[in-house]
Image (cartoon, rainbow, N blue to C red; front, side):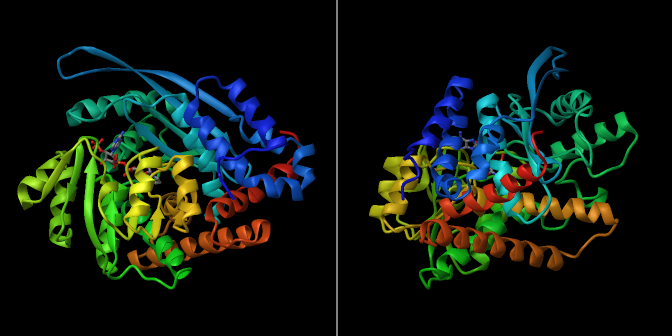
Length: 452
Ligand code: NDP
């Protein structure tokens, strides 16, 4: 069953979204995929149509937009746009990351926030959906400039968030450094030390495994997926895109499980290491990206491997592809290259990295496909575990959190296969399965709460 086909009532719902949100193409794309997937569940549950659950789900509960003024190191005033989309609180406080990237706009954040609703529902934890960020570019900024921006961003955002209201986290361009600055300013403004952000440093309320969680969770999900073909990660050649938080720990877990990582990338190009990236080379990448904030090209210079400027990793022969950089990084042509080279599984570490046409090609060619909202949910799930630890005032060990994360990823996989089997009699269609499983939980919660 294709993901880009819309028929009947869902086509009408989609047309309305396009009409009401002109030009927001990424948001349209995310809604379309979900509508195409949940059609069988909507037909089986007419109560959703009567209560206009879909029409309510695609409209954010609240959109906050604000000015972020700050002064750069040359004493010049800079102004950025700040956003927070509080999309849906049916099953818990709004929860979702903050993205700092020049491409950030309302469409990108609405697509991410919309996806987040269903993703969070799959985690088994009580978290609603939200997303935020700014068109600020942390690249080539000094620590002082990043701090000034973060403080100014929080000067406005603090009014709308809180431990039981809305709990932001990291995303592209927001790691431990930025969360620290944001948390410090929230505390100063409110005089409260509360679980208002996740991804905090371990010394001030963070959770062990949170930095690793999205990448590790992705591999736990891929491990489950591979079982459908009686396959294992050990011995597989793995192409990974990106070299940020998700990519780094996806690579680490792949290596730990005996896979061979052959690529990493950034927005300037891709490195191809035929010998495989080992733990030692990976620790160089972590230092390069998280401390020196350099470019992945430097890896090729240091280890003498190939570097391809302005190219993506998908032309290289691999068994497993893990897109972990950004949206729409695997298009139809990339998918064809991967399929022709014999890829058996694709796990989405990034959000919406595959276009709808690419997903359809993977499904049509029996490539195991783990959609983002299921496969990368380990990050937000561990954020949920961080909130839990903050609420009870205890810290769990690395092993305890890792075991809980693994259990959650298995549960997400099982919920997805069960829903796919129930509604389309094909447990391997995890796109449909994840969308329906997430939607049923949120839809039922919205029904129970009446028209609000
Ligand atoms: P980081 O900022 O740590 O890393 C992002 C990586 O992607 C960098 O290597 C960056 O390269 C690359 N990248 C960004 N934009 C582009 C682009 N337009 N073209 C090519 N490469 C690009 O972000 P994360 O690792 O945290 O996030 C990566 C993806 O994973 C995002 O889609 C995010 O939404 C998703 N995600 C993240 C979670 C988390 O816990 N962090 C949780 C769930 C999903 P460069 O340095 O050159 O910009």
